Image (cartoon, rainbow, N blue to C red; front, side):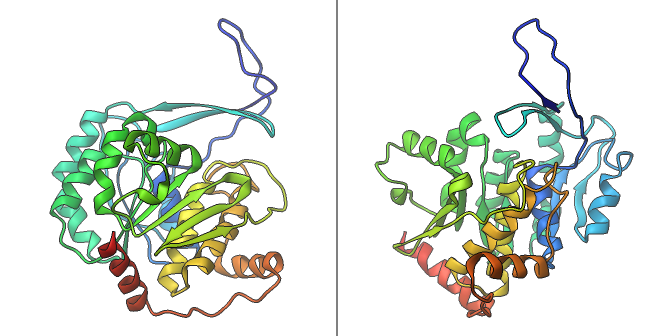
Length: 314
């Protein structure tokens, strides 16, 4: 909802524009990855309105594997209500009807999660039920790369986030979340975090920084054609980075590709509205960085070996 100003207590303000769009951190990453032609699947609990509101059809048409979507007739899908002042701040309200019932469904289907996980090279964990994540990762014996983006849960349940750090290879945060992790762990530098091989910190319009194997990469933000709505830009950034790794790109180029993918998301309302194809990413990459998109320099086997070896050093 777009407003000229936020309402004070007991005040009513008109809404200039209202849109309903699809979202959810995990689904955003899955859809963005699928648009980039990466094999993509989703494990999550939906609601009784999943099919009715055409989200099931939308995910299927985008090429996302939804065998891991757990249906229920007990409650609706979770959703966010976002109030935005144009080109300014947001207020976000999050509605999640039955967290306990969601947890029960997740734990009941943990074997399904383990079975489907074996079909993928990267497992990406975003905002969700962190106790389920911990149970899954504690006993999971797969060889996949584990990617983790705790998002706003860093502030809601910081200690649950910290307990998962030792299981992940790739850690994604924004600068506010990174600051919170440093405070909780009493660290002087984010480089002191134990566990992840790679840490990527998004800085909004200032781009991102990546820490990997003792090296520091500063990745600029790719300029969009217009700025409409930043919702989901972080998720599409993750999708771009993970897809680039799957294709065999080095860390710095993967960061640049991620920044390019994120720039498209900002150009329309909604997290999944303007996600690009790989061809569009290549054209914008070459226009912004003033060089051809390089050919991948690594096989997936070399990529995973590089990441796993770096984790062993941590």
